[in-house]
Image 1 (cartoon, one colour):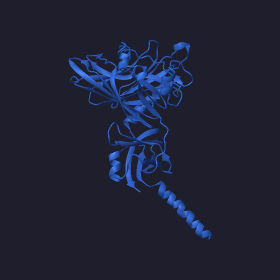
Image 2: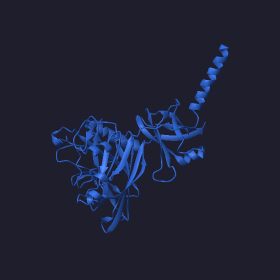
Image 3: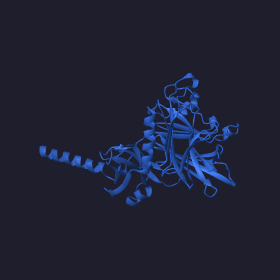
Image 4: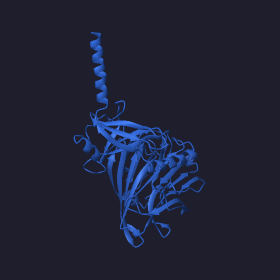
Length: 378
């Protein structure tokens, strides 16, 4: 009898192992000497269907090698059909990990990203993840005469999503224990916006005219902003910006297109500089600039240091201080993809050295992404 129960127990364990490893085996590898912490892994939906045509968004789940379900998101990017499946992984240097994509009952994952149009505040578009928050200005604000297409930063010391709560209280220019908006944009690029760069000069556009949310969590937010045509040289240029912000990163991916751009046009992305001295980082080869702002003392409070960074994959043509900005330039090609982000000395970025290391590491990880391979179906 004891042998019988022992045999049943062994069968149960084997069945559990089989259940844990059921699905499409995904091998994720880190080919670098750099630790990758909670980095997004993307698997093409088309590639998934090629292995298992019965997979559907409503029941797809991702499990780790121990059979534990981990948060995932089916990304549509505004399309009717899924484009990819994403999840996040942490890997040591030169390490690899197995994951399994299969069918099951999806858990209710806690959102770590959020964004929306804010009509109650003159058509801001505000967005955030568990590390940082941003906003950009819309048509209702432009109608008041305030024109700015730069990027604003809301610094955070909490991993909670705060956009809705802060707008509701309308008291976000003071730190009440979660962070605040102490960043000044004005008629500048703010924290990493882009503009055409013609004859050595920035050509700034106006506020966005239309916004569209393409994906909204739990791991990735993607939205698109459209702008009214404006003159760049002799051309009427129409600009579109598509922002993507994942959980657990300080950086947005930004995809910019300029329809009817002049031949050979350059673009510049930049960071507005303050009157008081700050710390600068310039790396032309890596295509990365960083700025550690002087201490902010708005409302007679020590609001710490806001940190900003911009990354051009593949490097930059030039970097310079010009018109109150730290700029990085490059020849325009459509679509132009780059990265911009921010951090806070009171929100997980303790020093200027730590921030510049974060910027450099982000640039390196863009250049050397995690390797993803669909191995088999089990």
